[in-house]
Length: 403
Image 1 (cartoon, rainbow, N blue to C red):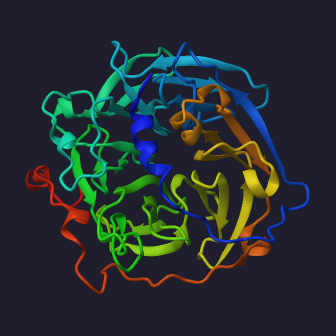
Image 2 (tube, rainbow, N blue to C red):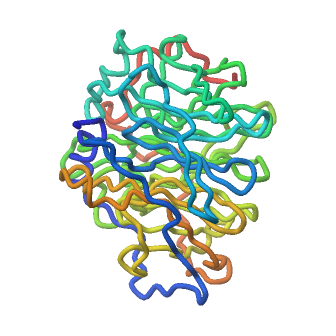
């Protein structure tokens, strides 16, 4: 089955990215990494997990990217059970990030309809596909399996490629848009608009994510994932970056939440990372980063001054396969494995298709190595190339402030 993932990853696999070098990395004594559950393929559709969140207790919800399903997983026993088909009604596409609403326990899930995706053109024509009424965010009742639109193109919201979701204690919903390179914000009724389109969410000369050598957007993949700090002061955002160079071009961006709910001026929390497809902030403020290109997981101290490699396919032999989404539960990290590159090569049966548990990995503030601080600026020294940051027509009808 030729799905959206194959077209995107066909370009990703040509991209040369690398995480911060840590050739002498050592795992913390007592650290464990194990496969909790594996998902089956259904015919020619690979059952690969993508999004992950908790059930509010000791369990997990996982989205299956190509099968468009949400499953419940018991990490203690490995028991799994299908919760819902999203959106349902034989709609075809890709089910991506999910998050549990702390107010009522429902699940919000991001869905991109399987139409042509123009990640690498300057104006993204698929963002204005008038026939697409299904791309957007859906609310799922895990008790009944009922699925209803929350914000979609069909409800008049111009989401292009909703990827990841974060929800604050008041029920406000933050959504990353992979194609537009922006963050949307909606209240519980679905009212809202573009919350932040800070330059750091796109490509700039300063961050090295614009390919100067080629003078072109070789792969415009912007903000992928979002996570809120537990103190409610910041929204962290991870970008995939692009060709960039041997040090990688993925970014960790930190955006202050203002008292009135608007987005403050972003700063660059960390740079020189591989493609980011997972982000979580632990109870103590530690920031966890899933590098899907290198199949690594990194932890950053709350001030960003120290980092620690806590899981790795190549360095530790962990069962990672294009490490994807992260969630923190009961002192452990749980991560989905999407197997991007094997899927692209038509080797779906070789993907691990699993959820991995990582425990007793230590604290980067104590066990990590020094992290050079990036330059905390948001404006590049030279204007950004127009094609790297196109002005999208739908923005003209949306407010830029808080919902």
